[in-house]
Amino acid sequence: MIESARKTLKKALMLLGVVLVIVSFSAFHAYRISDEYIRDSVPPPFYGITFVLHPNRYIDGARELGFKPGWVVTYAPRSKDYGTAFFVSLLGSMLASGTPAIVTKERQQARGDIEKFRQAFARVDAAIQIGMTFSNAAAILRIPPAILTNDDGTIDAYYTFMPRALEHTKVDWLTNGFTLRVSNAIVIRKLYGYTSSR
Image (cartoon, rainbow, N blue to C red; front, side, top):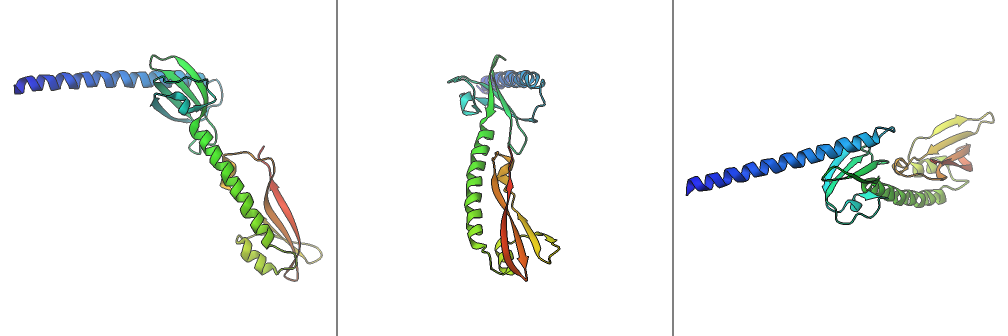
C-alpha cells in the first residue's frame, strides 16, 4: 500500500514537473516574440510577464479579446509613465498590443493629483496678497526662493513648485510658480510662473 502511494506521488510529481517545464517554455517563447516586436523602436525596459485569462484587463487600446488565456508581456519603466504591452497566446501567437493598464492607471491618478495641485495652488495664491510682509509670504510658501536683486533696490523672489505627477501626465499650461517683487520687506507685485509638458 505504501509502495503504491509512493508510485502515485512520484507520477504526480513528474507530471507537475512536465507541466512546469511546458509553462516556463511558453512564457519564455512569449517573451522572445514580444522582444522581437519591440526591438524595431526604442523600447522601454522589460517590466514583467503575467499569465492572464482576460487580457483586456491588462492592456488598454487592444481589440476585445474576451476570455483568452495567454501571456501579457509588459515593457515600461519602473515609473510607469509610458509603456507597451503585448498579448501572446499559449501557443505563441501575437494577438494584440496596447498600453499597459498599469500605465493608464498611473496617468489617471496623475491627472487627479494635478487637479489637487491646482486647488492647493489656488488656496496659496489667495493667501499671498500684495501689501503683506515678505516674511509672512515666505512662511506661507515654505520653500527657499531663488532671489534676484534689481537695480532699483527691490528684489524678485522666484518660487517654483513641480508636482511629481507631471512625470506621468502632460499638461498644456500649469500655473506652478510665483515671482514676488519685494520692496522694504513688503510684497509690491505678484507674477506667475507656468510649466508646459506637451
